[in-house]
Length: 214
Image (tube, rainbow, N blue to C red; front, side, top):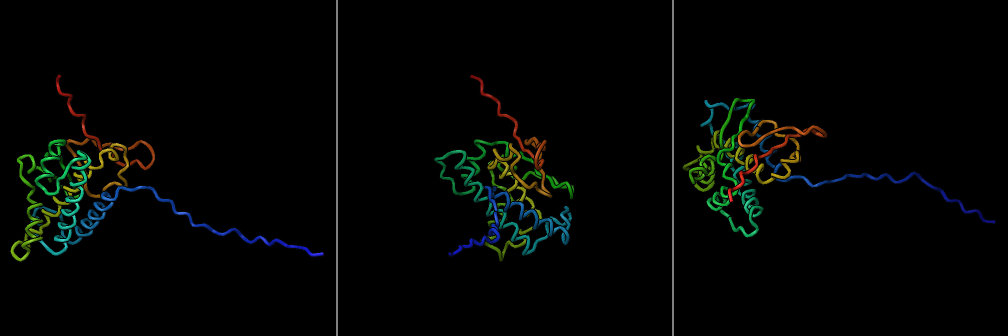
């Protein structure tokens, strides 16, 4: 008589890693913000240092402005599926047509007492000084390296932050832009609150647009 033994070993361990969609461009902004935070240990973000420039500040300016280019193009296509905008002048025209308030959007860095309006030049139909500086340093670095300044880098990262709040407007209203920025805050025209549950992340809302009279 044969006896068959079924030897049952321990269950195989399974390493379960769940993944949910994340706002990729938001994460990129947070990485740049972290770089600025690290830099602030060596160069105080204060008016006396705004004209300071370096290779690291050039890298931050390049990275932020290049990302602005990518996000602005995507925002234009989100605003209009037929958009063919691919340059800063076209971005300005299309984005301000739908969101003129971007030109007055205020950004602050409370830790260092700074506040600025990265896109204010769009109110005059001009491009931001930091954007022009980015192109000068990119194409004529031998003559314009000094434009890779702390002031331009701060404005470029702040400009990206502002643009993302318009690009991710639905996620911003739902408190889904997580984690929160460490340094940067936004003011007018945004109304900022916190979720009352869960991670209690920031909620960013624009006031409703006025209804045109019929």
